[in-house]
Amino acid sequence: MVGRFITLEGGEGAGKSTLSRALSARLQGTGLSVLATREPGGSPKAEAIRAAILGGHFKPHGAFAEALMFSAARIDHLDTLIRPALARGDWVICDRFLDSTRVYQGALGAVEPGLLSELERITLDGAVPDLTLILDLDPQIGLARAASRRSPGEAVDRFEGETLAFHQRLRQAYLAIAADEPSRCAVLDASQPPEALAEAAWSVVSERLIDNRTA
Ligand code: Z5A
Image (cartoon, protein in one colour):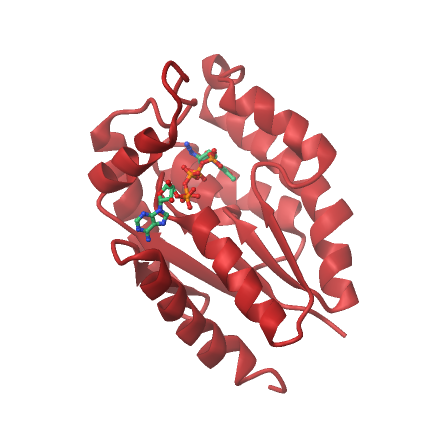
């Protein structure tokens, strides 16, 4: 039995974690076993790498060094958590995955595309998501949501501290990926309330994965 692999992508505060919880509950309600996880992180070693990256420790070494660290975390996450779950027949929902590297380190970090795709090939070793939901949102709204969640005096992380122009380019980079790979990706309007977004996501999941489960 082989499970299905769904990834959630988008800018800061787009609602990925919120949607992950709603989608997990909905899938579990149909009797499926679900693993909800995130990147960077998910496994203990990858969570340790996450703390170093988001703390900005690799920023001085440039975007390629950061891409290597995200990839190291991903390899451990895939080996220890994601592949075993899929092999058991679980459905995996991962909050950020390969497209975050393509967008943040590739489109925005300007790591050379050939280098990044070779790194992706080695890192994934075939573990390409069955479906990627791209949560599309005006970055001003997303950043405001992320800011409202921070406690007073809490520092912004490595990427939240980038300029609005950075976040606008990020949005376009995600839309370009969705246009290039329409069979894997679906774009959802993340400005809708959480319940409506969850319903829209469920329609896509049902149509593309559940109704076609025997295909
Ligand atoms: N990164 C990278 O550069 N390369 C890589 O390969 C990978 C990652 C894997 C991880 O940050 C950072 O690492 C990320 C990219 C980079 N950049 N940053 N920053 P993270 O995991 O800490 O943060 P995030 O992924 O951006 O998630 P987030 O900021 O926590 O946002 P979210 O999960 O999309 O949103 P949320 O937590 O569900 O919701 C945010 C708030 O909005 C919260 O108060 C909700 O109640 C509210 N919300 C949620 N949905 C809605 C809707 N639909 N309407 C209104 N309000 C909502």
